Length: 331
Image 1: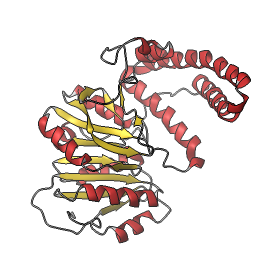
Image 2 (image 1 turned 180 degrees about the horizontal axis):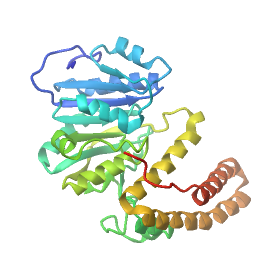
Image 3 (image 1 turned 60 degrees about the horizontal axis):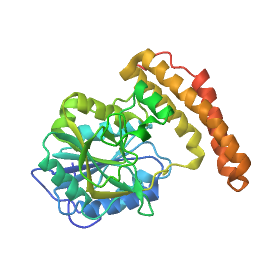
């Protein structure tokens, strides 16, 4: 395993112990991945660290370009796309660090972010996974903390009930919270997170039945079920661009998203829970579609965006009525 510190190309050095194993899964995002590695290696220069990059059968020459630009990065080149969870699992099995830093190719740590994440974990030994404060490209806040999905929460959100309660209430959510203080949360999105090795060893890796989406929600629920806490630390800031994939793949990504939602609900709430959640989805769509149609009539200047929203909601309504998973996929 190659370990390094120092310049941004990652000059290899020997180390008896690795503080941080950074893990990236890439798929056809060559330039973004190179930019991510440049920012990441700058952040890791003061730590004994290693970087493992899993290339999920990219067709844009990513693996060769990354090996050339960053020779100390360990590149694991897959013959097929294993998905987000499968790719990360492959690297986590090989990682040797005290902490595992999982970061997307479209996430760029700001100065001091990794140091703040590690310091938080050192102060909070019961936290198994912590997320940073995510920012959009323009520096605005990107919501990254959420409550666990459930049939009851699906109905609450359909009826706009969380807006009536504070972020501290079990009935509320985090949408009105400024993400401006450390706290324990249900789960954080997986664009960037630091994981304690002991927690990973106890809980295991991602459930690979989730090809992409919802795998981090499921994983962190398993952390919580094993007694580990999920933390959030705002002093660590990471710019997350989002939408790094080819726009032509958007329909495929949407299909993965809703399939993963079904898998999560079946796994944790059974067929009855999925049915109750699906009913909430349908009621929500029926309630909201007329609102979008009305908006289309009174705001012709917003016609394209509104029409696309109506088209998406209509297709989703049909999907939620006609597409029903027979059972949980085999592990």
